[in-house]
Amino acid sequence: MSLSGKEIFRTYDDYGPVIVTDDGDKRYMAFSDNDEQSCMLKSDPCLLQNDYCRAMLLVLLFKQPKSMVMFGLGGGSLASCLHRHVPGIKIRVVELRDSVISTAYRFFQFPRSKRMTVLNLDASEFLEDPEQAKTDILFSDMYGVEGLDLQQTQSWFLEHCFNLLKADGWLVLNLWNQHRGEKEMLTTLCELFEDVRVCTTQEGNWVVFAGKNASAISAAQLKNHAKKLSKTLGYALTANLGRMSQYKGRG
Image 1 (cartoon, rainbow, N blue to C red):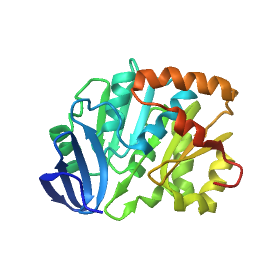
Image 2 (image 1 turned 45 degrees about the vertical axis):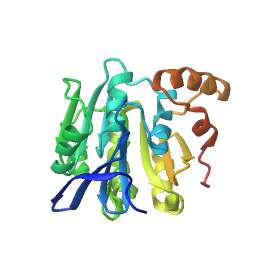
Image 3 (image 1 turned 30 degrees about the vertical axis):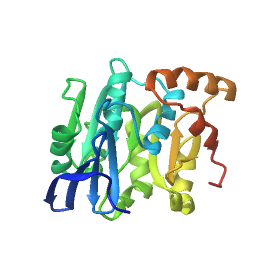
């Protein structure tokens, strides 16, 4: 699959290329010549374009956060959206590649804000730091030239994520459909978390939501909340909500 638009920037680091293309209306980030990583609508940078990003924000139906941690920056669309729409939110973004950070600031209107801290670190290094403050929601969306960063599927990683969350916190993982069969990962999630839900997106992503406490919100309440939140975010949450289900040992 070729990249959309005309290439306007390319740089290289130890992990490979960071490519920016532009089709006039949208701007894209990629880590290879045939794999789109991030997409931004230039006229409204905070309006999420990728279905998997939109699906990840279903977590806001279960938790009204004051703090978030994000592993993986890309073009910064998810962080930008939350920074705009969640009043007073404090966000820590952990990104391995300094070149991705500088590109997000230069080409994707990523906000500079006192409420947004960007750390140039490996996620494992961040997780192993006992001084890191606990958070309400942790998003893990780490991809590179070879695809998914597989540490996100490892038990030790999930255990560290669990420990970083507050007592009623939620973990959100952006995976691929093929990871439905990762038995060790899924067993660990179900052992650690009281509430595990999954959502398959139109783009082939498999988003996992794991809450430390079981949610008592009814299906009707979720639907009503989704309608209200959709007006705030500028896109409909209901389609992805309809694809979300409790994980019971099957995808």
